Image 1: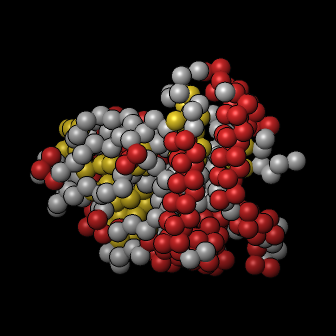
Image 2: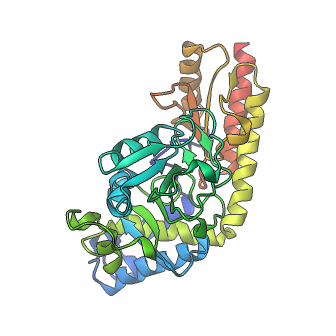
Length: 359
C-alpha cells in the first residue's frame, strides 16, 4: 500500500512528529494527569504553553519588540472585519490590492466601514505591478494577501507603501520563508495551513496601531482588549495553541525559516518542472508570481473528464485532496511546510505515469 500524502489546502497536513507528541501527551500533559484540552487557560501549565508559543514565534519571525503577538479565534475571515474596525478610523479610507478570492472577501467586508479603493488591476493568474505613488496618502492602511490559496499566486516582493501601514493576510504562506515584519503594520494568518489545526488565528500588530477603535466596536473585536489580556480575555483555543507551539518547536529544530524556505523552494521547483514538461497538464500562473505553497494545474485541453479521472486515480495511489477549488476547477497541490519532499516526488511520479497511460 502506498503511503498517504495529504495535499489539502486547509485544514492541511501537520508534521508527523508533532502529531505523535500530541498523541503521547493527550491524556496527561507534562505529567499533570490532565489533557491540554482540560487545562484551565488561567493555569500555570497553560501559561507556560502560550508564553512559550509566543517566545518561539517571535524568535522564528524575528518580531521587533514594538509588535504584539495575539492568538485569537474566528479565523482570517474575522480579521476581514477586525482590521477596518480598528485601523480605518482616522480618514475612513483604505487601499486594497485584489489578487484572488480571499482578498476580494476582505475588500467586501471592509467596504462596510469606510471608503475602500482598489489599487492595481484585479488579477487572477498574476500579481499586479505596484509602486508607492499608486497608494492614497490619506489611506489608513493598505491591505494585501501575500499568497492566494485558490489561485496559486504570491507576492515575492513586498510593495512599498511609505508611511501607510501595510496589512497582510498571510494565512497560506506564513512561516514558509523569512519575512521582515517591520515592513508591516499588521499581519494575520489562519492557523490551518502552516501553523497548526483550525481554530486559532495568529495576529502580529505594531503597538501604535492599537487603541484607536471606537466605543461602538464590540469588545472582543478591539485589538486593545486582546493585547491588554495577552489573548486571554476569554477562553482561547487552548489545544490549537498547544499544537502551534509544537509546530514552532519543530520548525526551530529543522533550522528555522531559512532552511524551511530552501526545502519549500526545492519542492515547488520539482513540481513546477514536471508540469512545465507535461503534455497533458500545465500551471496557469505567471512564472514570476507562482506560489511556493499552492500549485493549481489544469488539463491543457480543458478536459474535465480527464481531470476527474486524474483525481480519482491519484487518490487510489495515496495522493489525497488534489481536487481544485470549486471556483477554478482542475487540480491543486498544497505543499505546505509539513509536506515532505517524498510526497511531492510521489505526485510527480504519478503525473508522469498518468501521462504515459493517457497519451
